[in-house]
Image (cartoon, rainbow, N blue to C red; front, side, top):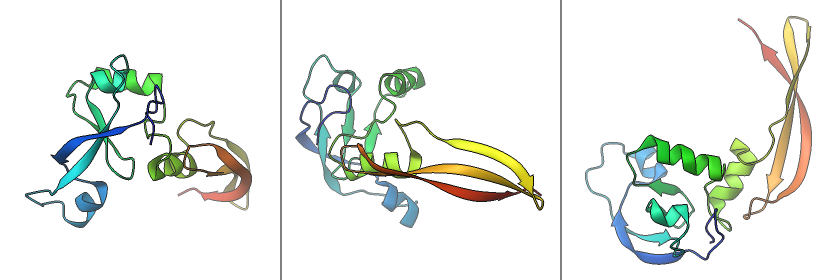
Length: 142
């Protein structure tokens, strides 16, 4: 995996106790977490290194700073904070469409439903878009 900002190879710098998204959904009241490998950027000039950002094996991003302004600065510098070569970066492009242009075009209302054209993507683990297609959706109003 590589850092999303400076593309330096991420290195295992130790182990920490932290909660993954799967654990949070399956058992939100878990008291103790197992030790897991922590991947961090080793470039001293990188914002990820300065703000003590780290990733797990799947590429999920963890951020230690309690200051929200620093997180906004990171998101402005790189809209997709998942590392290159991870499942999380692929999911960010395919599901959440982070770092790519979202395409949503509303069309006229037909039979009480709004037509909309949505753009869908297929990506690789580096976030490169391999395929793009459009879907026609019907939106219902209540």
